[in-house]
Length: 391
Ligand code: GLU
Image (cartoon, rainbow, N blue to C red):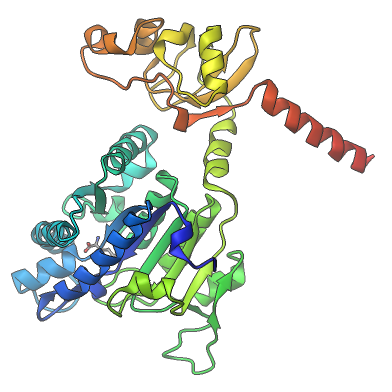
């Protein structure tokens, strides 16, 4: 299967630029939207998770409000987004429902992806939506985002969403079909780049700053998105979204630029967890829990014997087995004090103890990486082999 095939992926984030969705005179391009939704339905029929990062709130809002062309003041774009986002979400919801797909709206601000606690929270909500079979329709919460604390472009937001949800492909649909060595409308000698194995300084230099009134991101933010996504093991495709059925078009070989991932999603994420320099605390677990963890299960409060250290929800903790050795590391779902209160207790008791229905797992398996004997063995043999070569 060609690597640009969407079908071989299991979770895809699709970013849609404003200019594709909104015509400044006539408003929303509903026929085009319907064609995208039909493509999404095809992907989902192949058991692929799809997340959409949809721009267009500001563009649509300013059209509805009849704001003049040109740059908007911050409060004007915030107001435009408030008006446009309602219409945008409704359009997605209606169009997806034609294929009996349920849409869920998620509005994120920069802090939701950059602060770990909020990141975990947003991620849990998005994952839950996917689990329930809905398609998350995501945008920046432009109504409250101020210029200092906003992404401002959905290319990078989409890349963060991709890494946050462990997606293996990010598709950026806009009015350009890929990366060129120079802006093609300015330089007739510009060459198209089909495959980008790594984002080198030369590649970065090819991305000018182009942006139009409708789209905030130019090639610059797309390359930034590429760095975020590929660095976390997620491939990226830049393709034209102009034709109807743009996803099907990629599948059928339409021109696009493919950016190779630099690792696998799981490795990149788990490397990040395993690579935390100083775990903030330790959870001593019993034998049953130790076995469950080796079998790929989550760590439940019932399997924890003692908790040490001071940590907050979302911090990395070391998980210590019977021999007093670290067997795993993970991001803990509770603050240290709460963790102590629910230690050894059943997950069904959490609400009664803490006064709110917390997560069932003390450390969820998605947030957990085994660092103990098994891994040590492989790592050890690698190190020994390396040492032998070096010697
Ligand atoms: N969040 C903005 C909107 O929905 C779009 C940002 C972008 O164009 O990348 O209007």
